[in-house]
Image (tube, rainbow, N blue to C red; front, side, top):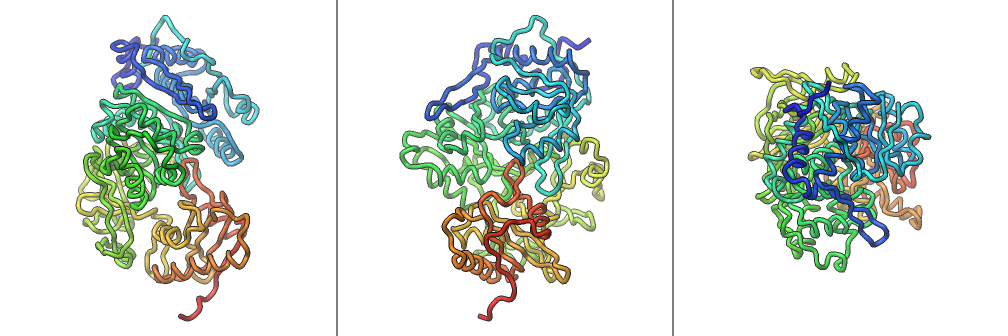
Length: 575
């Protein structure tokens, strides 16, 4: 029989049960829905949220067994919060996903369902397509009630957990096929405590976000941390933010957010896709922490955001860069939210040799802070020994938030988890990311598998992509990918860039743009690209969380399946 009280490891369920007992009528979570220009908030207090989670957990027990996987395909918002909590309450393994909205999402969900093999899937009452699209792969389908706030139970049961899995966090797949990271209740509790300790504002002020709940940052920071801390959580669907980015800042202003979060492209949109008239009246003076964990974080984007919103009370030190990944539940390093972000320039030639040397005209990188409650080492990937500060290597992590492996995938688990360092008794996670320590902060240089090696020199794709964005305003920001391509004779750099618009651009103009990009890369990085390819908007593969899929783009290019508007290659003219 399930226990009447929560195990200490079922920490989020225990916290919510406590808030429901001590402050039942206080606002727990608000979902902002939009109908044209009208914003309609849907709010549940702690008693209502606790009751809804208990009710749904009771239904899960009737249809599944402890440890069964439960796929969450609910609409973003209150339904999703209740669905995730019900899995924790009933000791079922949540598989956070998202409703299918297109062919790319459809294929991803299909792959995850095949890997996770859920016994049951949860969908919203308004969902009319998911069951028809995926059929038996969903297992049993349970539809949440239309009025989730009316749910109530007479027998409040929260199942005991031990070392059981809390959920499978499917990776965004930026470098490989998505894999389900096994997140235990202990991993989850450790990650929540690490962010809670590192970011003081989350303890006493509302948390307002648009981050998707199926992604690691959205699940930990946006959905779970408000309930862990007992502060008001406010969310809007990511699509609503993209339609009108001002909604995010307006919600932060109206609800007095102390903490929010967003990747690099979100901050850029908040500047480029809002107007002075829309920004009038905003008050961001209570905002203490804007967490940013995108890869890479651009210093010019941080500066532009501050310049745009300083007049509305935003303080530069609220920018809180960090670094994390699903295999560590989320956090690895976080900057102090009371300090201004640190952006330094490093010599490109030295970085290519694996050394970080400050240079006034070098590549700009943003510091991602110090360890957030775990051990972080930079390691020589080949020799597997820790390197000195200022030396580029692979980032390794050890700590209670580091997960055990990938669900049902012992080969990938052995590759990434359980690495050993001389003189250390810890089991280490190999992140696959390159970085270095410099003056107490971790800087991210790129992905180990994405590193381009030409004539013995290392070139980081993100650095080349930044150069392209700076020299070509015709290219969509954040939609450039650089990768190495072996043509059978030698490794070459290939750059693929999406245009802002391709509707009225003449062929000679496209050729001139590709030529300009190629000349600039050859000048700045001293390596002539083998090809510069221009494509229509939306052609570069990206993950569900918005990261570039360089490996897939490389494969499309190599097989001739990448639709091109223009391409240029061959020998550069003599200067």
